[in-house]
Length: 318
Image 1: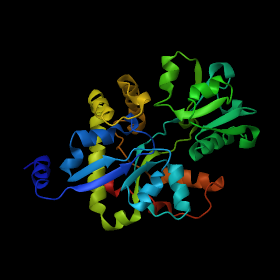
Image 2: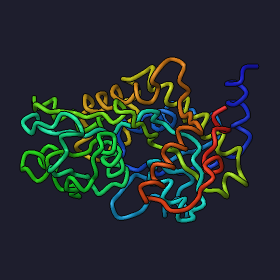
Image 3: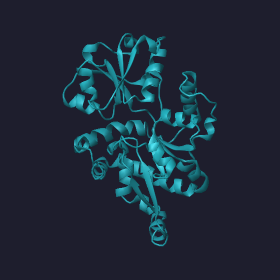
Image 4: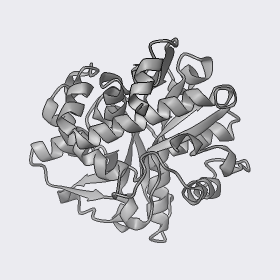
């Protein structure tokens, strides 16, 4: 009997476990693997009924996780380590993006082509995100510069990144290269883009995180959830049009209802999720984590000694 047939038969006799995941941004193709895992029945095959608690600005996805409103959440590495530094009982079980989708964009007319051009410029941080301030610091450090040589400006979400740049409120701003560049290209805007990974700065992103009590008491739940999630991402990568169709069933924000936009996001995400044919979706390494941890410690973003080997695990990816 095949494993798939076995799962289908046994799922008829065992109670389905309800699971809720809370992503770190509104529903769109950044999370296509999860939506495909739901729509294509991969979670159901593993005895799970999974729903997505969509991001909103009024609630904290960390608070939702810690209070039990969600069982898993998605966050950046910098957020995660900051919370661990604060004593939060959470564990990272996968990193969907092996290469961070974060990039820095400026209008071509600004003359900003590399981090050495940041001196005297207004560096925008969309939403005041910790991870982007860290990236700015690391990029400038690589050129022997200090963050104090520039002006950090936190900008909100009331305007788009393009609008912020056009009004000269800022000279450069962070964005997801997989997402917001769509409008730059659609409107034929001449821009410069700085990819941190090309300067040796690569940070995992879209960590899948759960509570320590689930790790201790229900490891089979995590294993079932992750195996179906990875299968969902494999499906999305190999069936992009269907994955977009699956995703659009969950999109509520008007700006993301364009199928072409969703396909753009997915296609730009795939090389970052699976950089090569040998890459295992979700994988993490101690060395990758250690570099991030020590960088944050050195820059006084976190303050406590943390045993990195105990805050993440890949055992549920096997």
